[in-house]
Picture 1 (cartoon, rainbow, N blue to C red):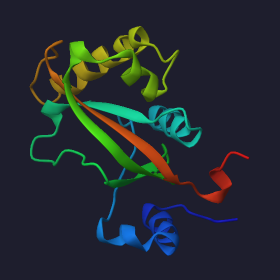
Picture 2 (tube, rainbow, N blue to C red):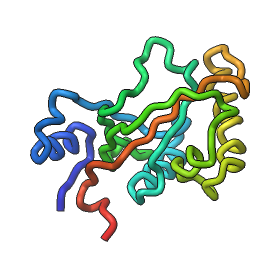
Picture 3 (cartoon, one colour):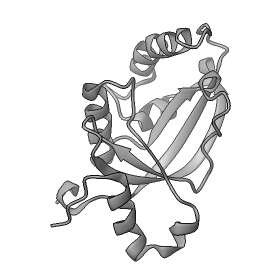
Amino acid sequence: MEQCDTAETLWQVYLQKNPHAKSKGYSAFAFGDGSKAMADELSALVVQGEKTGTSSAFALYGEEPLPKVGDFSVVLDGDGDAVAIIECLAVDLIPYHEVTEAHALSEGEGDRTLDYWKSVHEPFFTSELENVGHVFSTDMIVVFERFNVVHLPQQKKNS
């Protein structure tokens, strides 16, 4: 069994079979609000193939570059362990009020409906934006990224 605890270890394993990715590099992050519980829940959805999309408030990026098609990321769980490598397939900038059922479905959370998505993302965005001096609005721009899992450690694969 492959043992991959860190983002760099998992990335090096991936590069052995996919050397073309070396020039692109990777970022590493945990989904959610920084809590262990949310990072564990969302990373498990990625590993299970249920979560193939994610959204964030455009205003939170500041000087940080937006994701780009072809970017690689190592997904971390709540303990900071690497659980998957994903590749960005598409990035859409859309007003919150134009988020669709398809966007909500790809996030893989709850019952996967737009109503559920809004019920958890409005308070999430409100809190995150307040932390940086911004206010939630249904006109705010959402960065919506769709991705594909390109690598899982062997012990994380579903059989």
